[in-house]
Each structure stands twice: as structure tokens, then as C-alpha cells.
Length: 469
Ligand SMILES: Cc1cc2nc3c(=O)[nH]c(=O)nc-3n(C[C@H](O)[C@H](O)[C@H](O)COP(=O)(O)OP(=O)(O)OC[C@H]3O[C@@H](n4cnc5c(N)ncnc54)[C@H](O)[C@@H]3O)c2cc1C
Image (cartoon, rainbow, N blue to C red; front, side, top):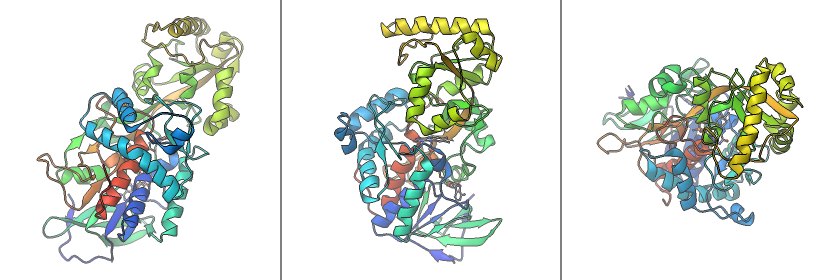
């Protein structure tokens, strides 16, 4: 339980204290500073970034000027409809609509006011989006996004206190949030006071016990995110009485390259690739998306192989640096004959040959609008053709999406609808917009939308200048 700070003594006091220096926290700090507040950010580790640093840095904006310049017609309404189609019904549908409305202004604010290098990705669409709307650093590396945000903090002289894990929240004698205690192996105990605290410490994907409790279908999946997501901030708000919503939602990834540990781009699948189990057999509708399909892989033997062709390999490697690096590291094998390909991975040759032949028929029927036995009809470029390509993969958990119920200004809500004054929840600490069906409701970009979108909402509200909704 959060502690009572009876003396009210603090080492430092600011108007807005932000816990966590990933995308959510850094954006919250910038928004609070812009609204005139004194701000500080306190981070567990010696470097800012968290999961944001590991991501591709893809931030959705529905109806940005960059989309218009590229001739793409989009709007908040279209974006919300897309996200809700993927997520299905959930406990915070209002938030899907609010974040969709705030997404284009956020992307434009990041680029034009804060000076973050983001460009619209037009080469391909992403899971859950009917038009291209993700904006990312040129490198597609989230750490570049983080570095730009940290530079923006530096320019504004916003203190970023690294290497200070927050251990607990402090309350004043009235039970109101008043500060935090930060202490670590190499940091003396420090008491930081603030009447407004933004929790931007991400979710609990790195906490096995909490994953087992809230997301049991991925309890045994390997966690591929940053070490800092250990769920303490979710536990603090829960212990203060916040209601938890959409708590079983997460971002999974069906195809982390094994043993390389990098992403086998899902574009390989969207362009016509299929996933097979160790017996060389397809087992589901891959168009569910990389997140939802992770649970299928777990249920079908725990690892899988992505089968595509050289044409798709070259297309994706030409557009995506991380995939190109995987190819250069030898993570993708190519052979003109399915039996030869099967031999690389010790998969039954007959089964793989038959699976590829059937997939070619399915792709042809799919092009005529007839779905295959699993319900898939979109095979991108069409039937796979020799030379074929293949990569061994394992399913992973990237981050959790559910958390504290919040109001329009990101204040955690109790079951009776009252707010916890002085507290704000963003990213993985707050309820997400990815539904109530495990990983299947996740659309690309939902992670950074709820992190940075809510970060901006929380930072502005904490500085007493709420954003338009
Ligand atoms: C491999 C991978 C790829 C992804 N790709 C994308 C993508 O392209 N687009 C997208 O939208 N999402 C993506 N995601 C998800 C996305 O990265 C996260 O949802 C998002 O980065 C969360 O941002 P955040 O600021 O809330 O958390 P983080 O970026 O994780 O930041 C939280 C910070 O809080 C710190 N912290 C934690 N506890 C404490 C504490 N007690 N005291 C002080 N500090 C603390 C952590 O150390 C961390 O630095 C991806 C995730 C992974 C793992």
C-alpha cells in the first residue's frame, strides 16, 4: 500500500512529477512544461527508453496533414472504426474515440512543435488499419524517437533523474497523493514531492505472476520487452482503489525470429506468407494479425516457421531495416524446392511440399473472394512461387494493454466513479483500447497511441491545462 508521508518533507518539489522515461513519460513532461508547470521525470534505469526504445516507434495519427500530402484520405472517425473492428467491444470504447480524435494533432505537435523526426509509413498498411496512418522515425527504431524526446527535454531544461526506481507513492495526512520515494542499489533514498503525479511506468508484461493472473493465455510466452515493465504502478493504483479494465489485453507477437530475437516482419505474412507448425502444417488464419496469432502458435506446439518467397523477402528487406538485418544475419533460408527448404529446419518435406501447394490454391481462390479453410482470403502478392524462403520463429509477449480505468483527463477511477486526486495514468498503467480478447484485439500502434496520446493528455491535465477532447 502507498505510504503516508506525515512530515511532508521532500528533497525536491515540482508541480508535476512523471514516473518513467519512455514515450509516455517524456511526452507527459513536455506537455506539462508547455502548459507552464515545473516538471521532473524520474526513471528506474540509467537510460531513458523502456519499451518505447525497443519498438519501431510507429505512432498512429488519423487524418494528419502528412497523410493528406500523400493523398491518403483518413479521419478520426475512420481510425476509431478500424480500431474498434479489430478490438471488438470493450470497457473503454470512449477512449478509442477520444484518442483517435487527438491522434493527428499529437503527431503534428510532436513533429512541428517538439521537433521529433516522424514520417508517414506509406509502403504498407498495418494490422487493424484500413489506410496507412503510422508515423515513425526514418530508421523505424524507437530509440531514435526516445533520443529526440530526451533532446527536447534537455532543450527545455526539464530534469530527467535516471537510475532512481520509484519504490512507492507517498500520501499526505488527508490521503492525497503528495510525492514518491525513489531508491535503488546505487541511489540513496530520495523523496520527491508533487501535487500531481503522472504514472508512466508501463504495464506488467515483465512480471510473470501478474501475467499469469491477468493474461493466462500468454503466461508461458517469452517476454521480449524492456525489463522495467514490472507492474508496480498498476499495483499502486489498484491498491488505491482504482478499477482495472480491459486487463487481459496485451500485444503478442507470433513470429519473433529464433534464435535471433528480432521481429520477423509480419509484412512477410501480409504479402502472402503462411505460418506452419513443426510438422509442416498450417494451423490458422494468419490474417488475425501478429498479436492475436501468438496464442495460436502457443497452442500449436510453441514454435513455428514463417514460409514466404524470395520476392517477398526482397520487398520487405528493401523497406524494413530490422528485417534486412535478420536476412543479413542468415535468419532467413531460401531454396528453390520445398524439400530442400524443409531440410534446413528438419521439418517433414512431404508435409511442407503439400502445405505450400495447398496455400497456392488458397491464394488463388482468395483472390476470387473465397476464403480458405481457416477463413483467410487475403494473400497479398498471391500464390508463393519458387524460390521459397523460411524462418524459424517463436511467439512472444511485447507489452500489456489493460490497466486502471481513467476519466477523460487520464485520472484513475475507482469503482464508484470517483477519481484519485493528484494521480494520472498513461500507457500500460491505464486501460488500453485493445479490447477483451487477449492479444487478438491489438492494432499496430495501439501501444504508442495509449502511451504518448495519454501521456500528452495526462501532462496537460496535470498542469491544469486539459487538452481538447
Ligand atoms: C519489440 C517491441 C516492438 C513494439 N513496436 C511498437 C510499435 O511500433 N508501435 C506501438 O505503438 N507500440 C509498439 N510496441 C509497444 C510499445 O513499445 C509500448 O506500448 C510503449 O512503448 C509503452 O510506452 P510507455 O512509455 O508507456 O512505456 P515504456 O516505454 O516501457 O517506458 C516506461 C518507463 O518507466 C520506467 N519505470 C518502470 N517502473 C518504474 C519505477 N518504479 N520507477 C521509475 N521508472 C520506472 C521503465 O524503466 C521505462 O523506462 C512494441 C513493443 C515491443 C516490446
